[in-house]
Amino acid sequence: MNNKDGNIKEKLKQALISTARAISDDFRINHDFKENKNSKKFDFLDLETLNSKKDFIKARADYDSAALKKKFSSSKIYKDNLPNNSSCKSLYSIAEKIRYETLGGKMLVGIKKNLEENYYQILNQKRKDQLKNKDDVPVAEAFELYMLKKFHNIKLNSLTNKMLSFWEKDFDKSINDHIEYLKEN
Image 1 (cartoon, rainbow, N blue to C red):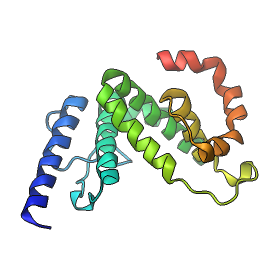
Image 2 (image 1 turned 180 degrees about the vertical axis):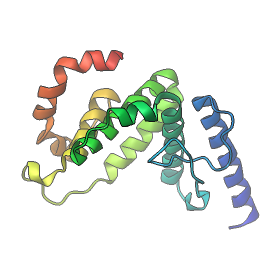
Image 3 (image 1 turned 90 degrees about the vertical axis):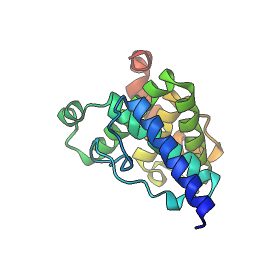
Image 4 (image 1 turned 30 degrees about the vertical axis):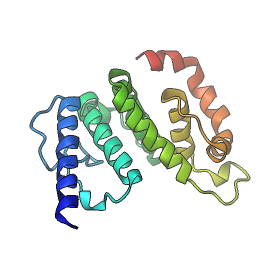
């Protein structure tokens, strides 16, 4: 890496950290900021891996999401309501992430844009060879697509629409009666 690249990456790191401080209302965040999936602590983000626009979009979204988790999520409440079943745990985790990201997207349009760009990028990278039935699509993957569609208003592509189609009626049965309440709260 040459000096110019190092300078750009350092400026990017400072911008991401400053944004995370502002979003999370935690001005103690330092260079070690990146979400640790198991807590509200943060680990060092390796900016050496930023080599493309896709990497930059992902980094912005990851920083925004981690800051929103710090601002809007309580680890005590999360743990108190965590289901025992491992499948349910993953669905609960997805729902919680969508919840705090939705709150942040309502708070700041830039956050919403960063998260949406990242999700569209993720959706466009999905590849499935053969989708014939429900067994070909893990419930957690379908649930995340459902939550993105319902709460982030992400427009799914043909592949992700097909993936969701196997599960959507089941999710609707459980959630549709409560969807407006969930969106408002």
